Length: 132
Figure (tube, one colour):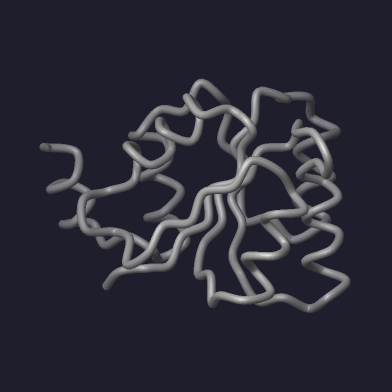
């Protein structure tokens, strides 16, 4: 099964790392944006199964994006990928509906564990993806 994925981070390097950390064959379509306003625009016009979202960005940050997703009733799963590792941030993103919080620098193994935990990745596919 493949998914439509939206990667939202103002850092080109972070977006590249997130893209490369996804298992082989995981995505059907991958959209990349640099801020929350653009992320909400993509969400309004495309069915996104999974969003990888940074918290600290110009124009509109990740917490505001999560609030808007909730307010608008948009249907997408969100995993926050951020260097902001404060416990209050973890609680806030959870209260706004994010599935999980993965710290930066992103490690593929950690992302795969989260994808497996929420049913996006089957155990055998995870093993195959890690072997590549």
